[in-house]
Image 1: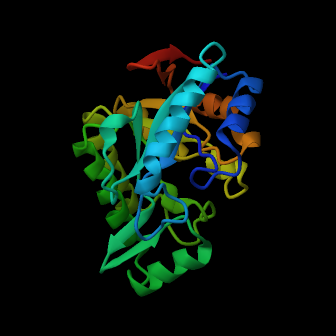
Image 2 (image 1 turned 135 degrees about the vertical axis):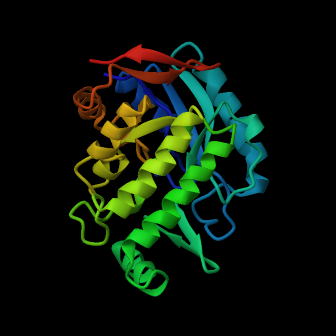
Length: 271
């Protein structure tokens, strides 16, 4: 099993458990390292992101956590950074770049809030043109290629969270795929690592990870790199679905995944 999770949340943002509880769960699950990826501040989503005035206290808490568990498990200080944020990324060990909104027409519509919100923005912003929504969404992901600090691409096709059956989006439509693959190609060229993210499975929204099998296969053909993460918001999901994610990666032709060693990302053999 892949023994690192870099996509972890706690009560400091929208997680359900304390950092200490997450660390103990990670140790019990057999992980050798755990990264906390706090949500970067968004002024229109303050309820689940880190307020700027809390960053000093959070930084101190992370430093204490690292020291406390230095002989047991490696702890890393990460951030899940949204393209709409203005956070200083230099202070973090690593950066996950994620898009949670489609920003258009003076609206910031969260793509993973609820099926009702999805239906609303597709109807009222995109006039029912789901492919246009996908094009807007993936164009934002492509912009992460220009952000040198971003190491990992988070949940690349998050907009399909409530749509495994294709009710809202047709993930195999030419326009959807063209937009996704164009963004993916830019990100691969920029050296970004894509996470296989099991978070929607553990929370009961999907039966397969992000990105989809088709996108993972395309990523492999492009020579892209992967890591495995659980996007955990609770102690019981800190390494959720890692074995299945690893099997999926192998099925798609990958032989290695990338882990952070505290300084750089290094390949490890899977399977």
